[in-house]
Image (cartoon, rainbow, N blue to C red; front, side, top):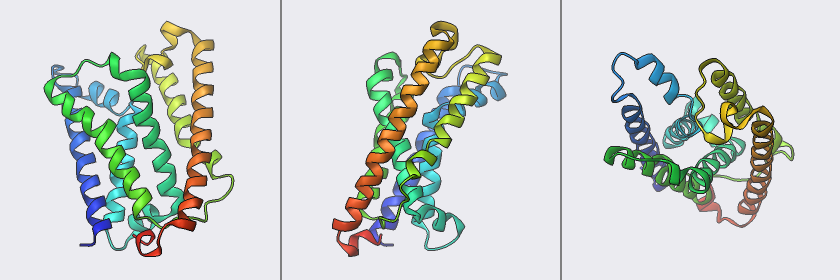
Length: 213
């Protein structure tokens, strides 16, 4: 197995391990509430994005197939890079001090917020083919976080539960949450623009034998 395929296989397996640990932490101590706790688990942007990284990494570890073709597209790889960067940055800036981790949860947190993002981004730089992303791609990449934001607000309105404090309408009020969501959208768009520029730069300067991945 080539180094790029091995790199992405390891990334996929670590993402799977992190997701598994986080699921166990989420459902432990809540007997009879499996469906509710599973929905809560699937309502975190961190979980959904690590699942996206896992799928793309599995695709890149393969030689062919629909998943491989999807994952090798520069726009796919770069969009995933934007999303997992947001996961890592927002956790470190806004959430790290608010989370109280069990010993098992510490390992899950290390995987989904640090190791998996670092491995994915390292692979994006080192191995992937780059270039050819459209000039408006960073706006299309907003569909996923905006859809997530809409789901979070709708789910919170029905249950009173919000996965992140900056989206908690009950505590902050709708106007404040609206501002927070607008700022997050600008952050995603700005980061997307920066990553598209980096992708074009890598396409120009990355040695071809490394860029092919």
